[in-house]
Length: 151
Image 1 (tube, rainbow, N blue to C red):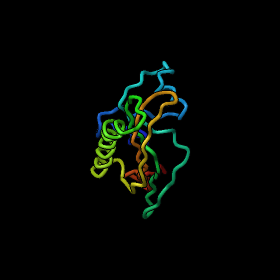
Image 2 (image 1 turned 180 degrees about the vertical axis):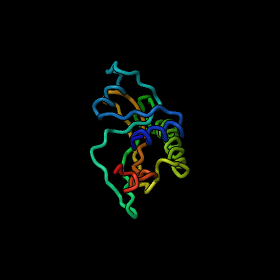
Image 3 (image 1 turned 90 degrees about the vertical axis):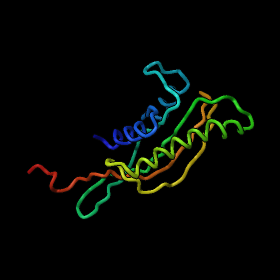
Image 4 (image 1 turned 30 degrees about the vertical axis):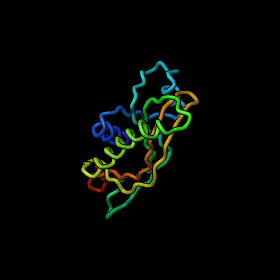
């Protein structure tokens, strides 16, 4: 199972929300309803396709390490002052994000290395949605070592 599959499974299992992993352009099209490839479902979690990562070495065991921004998003109403969005939509998405983060402490697939920051989103360009984003660094729990080599 790839690390993205592990992230997807962990988010969906912890929150019950669908998880989307795609290019920023495709995610925006799907949120606005412009893409008919697959139906969009809110609330959801999303992650842009990753461009880079790192490998850690602990006593000869290699693990992939990623620093990612996962957004927890929901459809929103147009709110010019932002108070209703913050207290209704953003708080609900923050709760879902925290539920996922806490579930990582029990995960057998992923290890939460650090929580690096958060961000709030209120998008109105293509679609009106609110999101709470978390920037985290994750390691795979299971590594790869010389024992895994087929010789």
